[in-house]
Amino acid sequence: MEQVRIEHVEKTFHNKEKEKSFTVFDDINLEIRSGEFLSLLGPSGCGKSTLLNIVAGLDEATNGEVFVGDKKVLQPGSDRGVVFQEAALMPWLTVLENVSFALRKKMKKEEAKEHAKKYLKLVHLSKFIGSYPHELSGGMKQRVAIARALAMDPKILLMDEPFGALDEQTRTMLHREVQYIWEETKKTILFVTHNIREAILLSDRIVLMGTRPGGIRKVYDVNLPRPRSITSPEFVQLEEDIMSILGGEIEKVMREEMGDDFNTKKASLLYGTDRNLGDHI
Ligand SMILES: Nc1ncnc2c1ncn2[C@@H]1O[C@H](COP(=O)(O)OP(=O)(O)OP(=O)(O)O)[C@@H](O)[C@H]1O
Image (cartoon, rainbow, N blue to C red):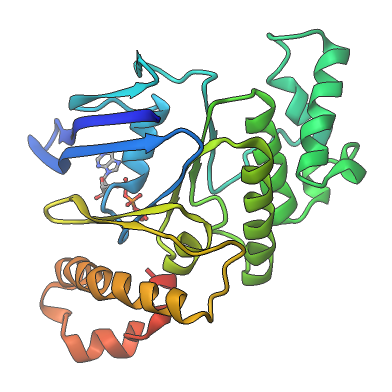
């Protein structure tokens, strides 16, 4: 059953001073099924975060509508938890207090702490409940942010490049963590990334977005058994399939940004054309 319906969504930004407007995408249609792990993948600037923010209710669509269940999205709500690239924890609060703080309106203080502990256990941070954010690594901070979002018991978890600022090893560890969380909680996850490998490792479906004009280029079903191996022939094949389209989209962005400075040879020297290109956009 679909849980999120994105219907004919357009987003245009208006710059009043310059009397200019810029349409990021003009007709996005997408359904996300209950319990599905769906990734939005695409080059920088194609509107992944904009779309996620519209689903979150943090930004407004210029046209079109988003529904969660049968409820139209008009503002943020506790049915949608958001995790951003930066954990944005409150530095003066402990890990436990950071997670329980958001629950203060829902339950009594002691109850909130017990509830928060449950989710900190889920992200394997039980040993650090008394620590302060500055005492944690980047990966641990993100796990606190995930626990904080999950503690509100949202139906849907919206994750905007949550591991984008982390080193490769931490990212790999968090990939395992997020898969475990997804399997344990059965949440619907909308995940924004520009990393092809990350998208294939985690997703049931990958929605490839393009730019100028913005929109959905292709939707891939990832029917590979989990846990997935990045060296399996099926994985490599899918990575190449996606790259063959994404590469063209990246080139379009680069052409536009570099103007006359762009040439294909220089682009391939700068960014490579191999499987890793998706990691660098
Ligand atoms: N508040 C805003 N005002 C004007 N333009 C904006 C605003 N927010 C985003 N944009 C533009 O909308 C486009 C889409 O931005 P968005 O951040 O959604 O892209 P993205 O695919 O998430 O990119 P990235 O992967 O780099 O984060 C970009 O061209 C961006 O400059």
